[in-house]
Amino acid sequence: MKVLVIDDEQDIRLIAQMGLRTAGVDAQVAASGPDGIRLARDWRPDAILLDVMMPEMDGYATFAALREDGDTASIPVIFLTAKNSNGLDAQAQSEGAAGFINKPFSPRDLASQIRTALGL
Image (cartoon, rainbow, N blue to C red; front, side, top):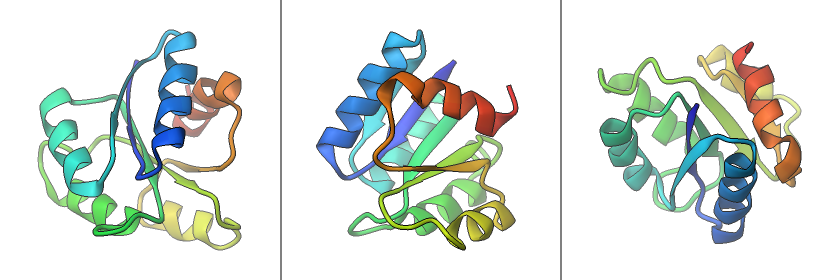
């Protein structure tokens, strides 16, 4: 499995990447929505973990851009957030997101949470 992590927080990117690699998942990271979109087009991950709150281009704008691009439209997206997800989870899923993971998350359990969100 290949997972792209798009998050503006360096610590989150590193924790997610290390946790996923420990679980045997090939993980790449991007620090912004535009960088993540470019990497998603080039690398074609099996899933994307996408932070909701980012400067420049937030998670929802990034998600919309991914859905509008024929190369990335079918990649499942799981949102990440440090905010209370009440209501956000339903909004994200109604817009076509595969799921929602709250921060902080356990690096050990991250791959399992992704598989659960993707129904694997």
